Length: 335
Ligand SMILES: [Fe+2]
Image (cartoon, rainbow, N blue to C red; front, side):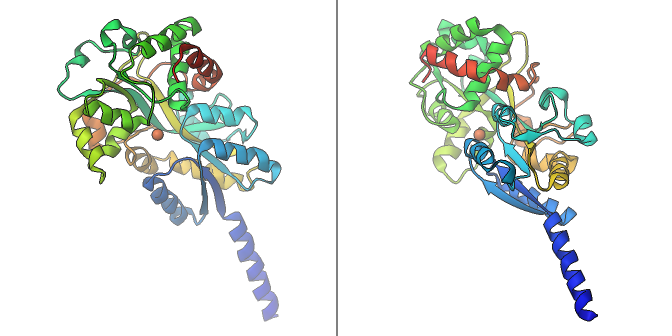
């Protein structure tokens, strides 16, 4: 009898255990994410198992694992990649009233297969003592001859640039996008190389005057143990450019539920948690990004950079025009 009860209890606890986990494939490597996953575990008793790799590797892995994939949630750091995961049939529609009501339509997939969780801004960094910001107001301005030998930017292989050019295509069409890409190349201070932080450092060190970078890198460089970063960042300031007929280029990190998620309910709970006001404040501000739900307090450093208006185009567009952007970069000679 006792044996039977014990066996029953064991089976029950096993089944609870099996149902109480969520397997997350994530491209985000931030300390705040770890903290949030722990908060979710404490709140719900659902264990969070994380596989970290870059988005391309995770998407490949999901593809090859197919129906047998243990993945429940895919988190990536660019709308273009979320779009790619959806196009390959790796995600499924998420049925969540909370997410639909709280995350604006232009920040989620058209079929609700993924939702943005943070917003990031691709902006310009200039020397602190420069007055370039008096005239440099738009992305379109970058191709004016007065900015010759000033611009520094990473390679066109990187999806942040591909998404930025996709936004140019969305606003002006392909013909202008090619003209714009060629114009930026003509104004480069050096050939595209390094990451975003590298451009910020180069602005501080006088190699060029305009660096294109995601603003959260500036936040991460402040007070960094690496003095080449923390010292450099003291000598720069951020301009939030806009598109002539739109706003400032934003991108997102976001999450989707995997097509064959074994723990689908937990996956939805997990994404809803990351979009909850409590988590949003930590998730976005911890990495100097912006929350996607309204009414959150801004990190003081982020607030000190000033205000901007989000671009008007849907984030879905960035993925849709990715292939075109890659081709135009190639034609423009933006390596
Ligand atoms: Fe990044």
